[in-house]
Length: 177
Image (cartoon, rainbow, N blue to C red):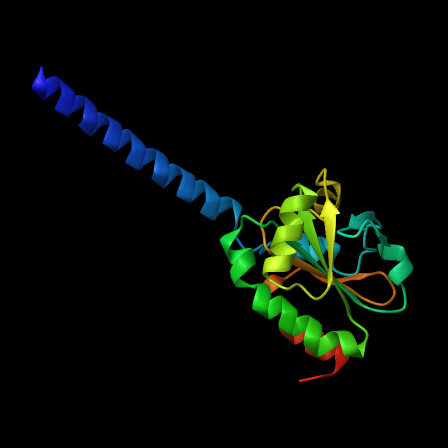
């Protein structure tokens, strides 16, 4: 009987380890930088899909109202480790380029307002946090990995969605090094 109990504990431990590994791998796969060169070719220069979302204070944000200034859309979730680790970078972009006219907004995908509010407070997010409650805006922009960034020019055209090239593109667009 004692061997059976030990065998049961060993099986439970093995199942727990395998389950943990599966959860970690799933999280890593679903929380990856969005690098989609084939999508990039099809959307660069295209009109940015217009949308309207509420921010954490209940105010409406409509992309088309922002015409005349470039807009950086940052798609995230609060549970994404990469999104959290990139927050200083996003804040740096805001600090560097918002005085030059760049509108920076976070678009949180399918999470409750309370969780996003806690996240914004914890990370002291200085720009608007928008709530994409149904994921419709992320779908319209073909977001499949997070974090993801989409740069929209002052005319409402998509400049790029290449995450790793965004800093260089912002420097070129807004002229600050």
